[in-house]
Amino acid sequence: MPVLSVLRAVALVAAFAASSAYAQTVVTMWTFLDPAKTSGREVALKSMIDTFEKANPTIKIKVEPQVFSELMAKFLAAHNTGAAPDIIWVNTENMGALMKAGAAADLNELIASKWGSGADADFFVRAGWDASVEGKKRAAVPLFHATTSLFYRKDLLKAAGIDPASIKTWDQLAEAAKKLTLDTDKDGRIDVYGFGTPLSTERTGGTTAFTVMLVGGGKPWTASCKANYADDVGVRAVQWHVDMIGKHNAMPKEIIANHVDDVADQFTAGRYAIAVMPFARYSQVASQAKWGGDNLGILPWPNWTADKPGPQQVQGWWAAVWAKSKRAPEAAKFVEWMINQDSVRAWAVTGGQVPTRMSVWKEPAMRQPKFDYMQAVIDGWSKSSFLVPLECNTARFDADWNQAVQRVIVGGKTAKEAMQEAEKTFASRQ
Image (cartoon, rainbow, N blue to C red; front, side):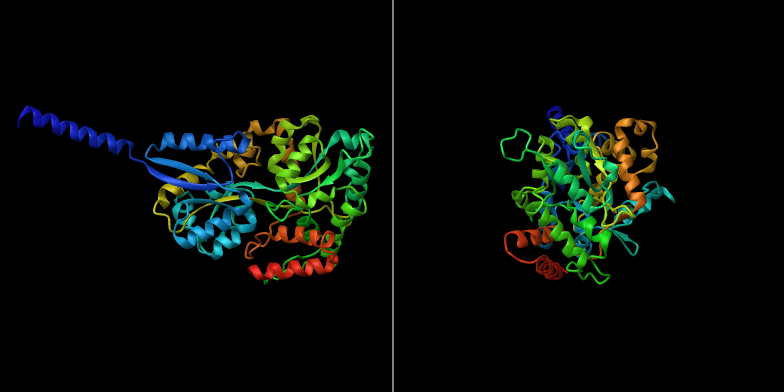
């Protein structure tokens, strides 16, 4: 063979080898986090992607951030048209919709069946680990468990002479909120409101005091997924919110248009003394609070009576692989990476999440005082905890309750009429 032909052949082989070496399978993931941003969880996710791609150079993870309240509806629409991402993040209230649609691949087959016997026991929040299991199939695995918490300012409660431990009922919380509502500069306008909770019908994300109120006092959903909102407990819960605005003046009227990010930003800026927020915001609020992160605390949930604490909701985010993905093995490989010990440690230490693995929670690094606030949540779960019924479509249930408050304040409905409307709205989604 002529030398020139040999050289050409060698060049072709080298080019083919080079192209093969750099060929990548692109796995698309939808999540509410943006790894290009700087919050704790986003930094943690970025580190997981970087280490995964380094260990798996033939796989590229492409993140397409979404608005969290629109994530599942958009995914299910994409599933129906055959254009969904390979990996989807799903939160508690949308798990039922994901499973009913049959839109998730079986992660027992793709992941868990390859583990040794008993390996899953490390995931100690069993309700979360088993949340997506139906028969022998698993639709999703937990990335991190979350909850909704009552954040409060220690300095303001101390100045008002309020012992946080004395707030055991919703009526006691209302009384405390009235004392904490302040006109600090004496100009006739309120500068600090005693209480804040998202009351918008958009971007609520399960962050509401209503859920604790209704579950603590009764059963808002039956076993057949029928809403039971307009009973005495539901009516009392709506009226409590209405009175906090119109009667006690402990919440501003404009809060009916505020979503979870609005309340978080306003609490951080000093607008509220006590506020309902995702527990995951703790480290972010502590680092950004103009009034000093050392003054940040978490209150146990109150109940309607003082004889038992309010229940602590188990929420969270899970990852699923799209049932029709052509890259399911690669997608499952990254999902498994996001729940390994190194990643769980990153979710906890960098992202401020309660570890999903007991082996990580028991590590000496987690015994530092800065992680004491996680213990408060674990204590709450151990005393009284609950999951919303995953067999029901509970998407936007909190938005329905928030709309009930709006219907009373703006629409002139009674609390009972407003909750009856909410029941009908819930039924229409089942």
